[in-house]
Picture 1 (tube, rainbow over the protein chains, first blue to last red):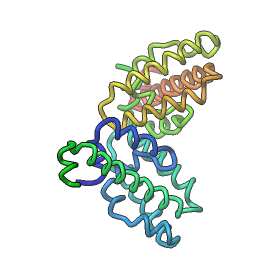
Picture 2: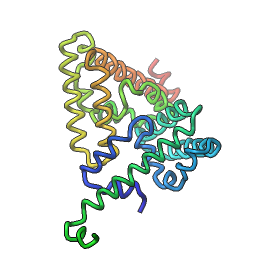
Picture 3: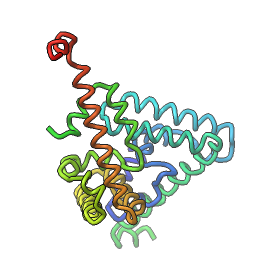
Amino acid sequence: MSQWKQIQQLDIKFLEQVDYFYDDTFPMEARQVLANWIEGQDWEEAANHESMATVLFNNLLIQLDRQCSQEPNFLLRHNLKRITQQLQMKYKNNPVQVAVIISSCLREERRIIALASVQEQGPLEKSMQN
Amino acid sequence: MSQWKQIQQLDIKFLEQVDYFYDDTFPMEARQVLANWIEGQDWEEAANHESMATVLFNNLLIQLDRQCSQEPNFLLRHNLKRITQQLQMKYKNNPVQVAVIISSCLREERRIIALASVQEQGPLEKSMQN
């Protein structure tokens, strides 16, 4: 199961934490439509190598553009078009920043999934692990 | 049929015109989830009367908040929450501006629907009307 699918199955109190760190710096809509592709790239590595960050950023825009052209729903297509334009404008001179933001989002998601998993375990199960 | 439903049934070349005037000043998502409510208010009148604009603006935020709390989809709920916060921050000191923007969007939509309707008529039909 993709990390993003795991996120969506979390309890509302954990979803509120996810809500918090997705804003216009990297919109949740992009995270959702490219869930598997995003999780398949090494953003941590790209955050430390500008040439790799540039390639990944260009691929991200291509992927978004493709999703946009295939989207039958007018509102979603409109949103994807705007998101693609905004990301392009905002990060074209600094693709490393995108890699930093996405790797940080993915790390935060993993932290929240782990936290939820610990809190879902009953006290007995936890004490048996200790 | 609501005006927004008519818009969505237009040909792609007209939809592109609609695409153009929906941006962050008034997001298309808000237009869509409150389609009937928005079309039922007199935004032209509110654009000329501050007290009426204030009431409509507060009602708009209440309506968005209600839609948000009823929305089962995590991404859409996240978007609606952000839109509500952004509209509140942006226009709380100038609700008349919201009325001006929405009335202008509705007018533009009507213009595009009328244009599409004329262009869909065949040459014979048009010449018979003249």
